[in-house]
Length: 179
Image (cartoon, helix red, strand yellow):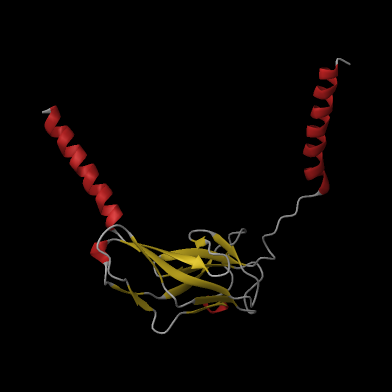
């Protein structure tokens, strides 16, 4: 009985792992620095476009599949819990057509990056402390103004820990000298 139960549980685990490994995984990549954009806050000043590309990891079973994608902008809660602005405050320019076909592969995992770019811009009509959830295909991220979320610590916040560390070095250095 234990062997049958062990066999069933291990079979279910294999099926679950194989199912997640077979699904194509899409990401957005920033053109300026090559970093992946996913589930993070992007700080974007007004009228400074963010240029992205679609990238997909896929299996041989997904070769030749054509993907269509679209974009959606939703105003999101800011740090005060307020929802400011509207969806027209952020423009998303998709390639025309917003589609790509995955090249054929026979083994392993394929990586395809679309040559077309997606341009996201925060318009000047956007309130200064508004946050927007941008969804492109099945990838989403939060977009906000770079000027509203910068935190510069005050001098004592930085100087006190540095002074404490230097003081410890001085004290322990003096003990080694035998003074």
